[in-house]
Image 1 (tube, rainbow, N blue to C red):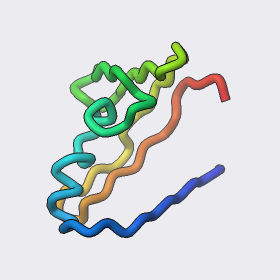
Image 2: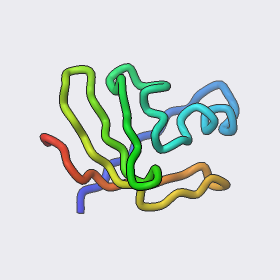
Image 3: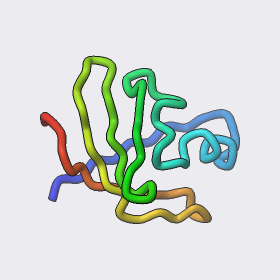
Image 4: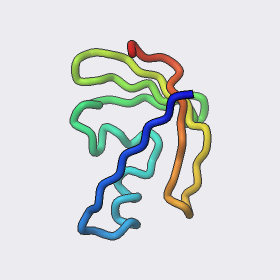
Length: 79
């Protein structure tokens, strides 16, 4: 199974960053490439529309608010 990871250091607290990006359906709040996201299946699946019209569907696999972490799988994507 392929895996990807990214990191960046920011001059703000982890709590403040998690408030912005921690919601599984919050990508449109901070990513200019994802203007819309629709949650289904009780918030466990998100249907993302990219700025160039591509649809990506992702499923939340694990969520740990205290650890400020979640993992997801890509269910449908053109890549």
